[in-house]
Length: 317
Image (cartoon, rainbow, N blue to C red):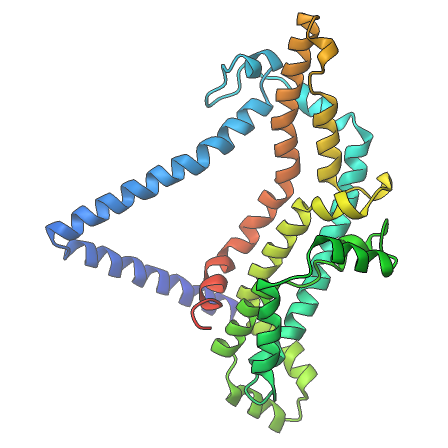
């Protein structure tokens, strides 16, 4: 069965490639000019997006003097691991990594669970009052209580300086609920539910055994959205956490950068100021790579579902 499915997908891709090639062969002069212009725009866009990443990667493996003198262009200059050594010498980086991994995994699990449990009932046409509840949920995208009321609520619930302050305030995203609900409406037919109910399947089992397995593309998309948001989160930690053992990676990285900035008492010592500035510049690029690498490693496994999930989930409202 797996081989058959793989062969079918391969055949569909080949048919699509042949169709596009035939379409280009039949294109008029104006169409060919459009394709050329489109390819040029895409290539320029790729360069604009890719070059900063390549530069940051090369700069992180260059020497401080090469980075400070702007000699890095594409490849590392005077290759060095000094920046990564300086980052990894900080024990708090490992503490931040462990905390961020926990916040990302636990937070994403909470997000996914609540999003599915909220989106699926809203996608059911037999759910009485679903338009009213959808209006209430969407209303929160436009109006919110604000920072101070939110802080008061978090404090009154006793979540200050706890891990829950990083998990519960961002437990669900209305945008992701709308995408997931629309995907369910588009791809999970009512006839499928009727057949499952006739076979003795209840709603919970239908959701877990049928809806969730058939919704892997949109689930992969919202997992990526939530995971990236948790991995980069720092504002909630900045407001709600003062216990350093609970700090996420982003706050520790900010501290490392601040500690390596040039202060007023260094201005008169030119050599010290130059060394400090060079290390600060090198640390900046090394920290970007260290903080971004896990997300870069995760994306290729989700990318095949990404386009399908986000497009199908956003076609209809």
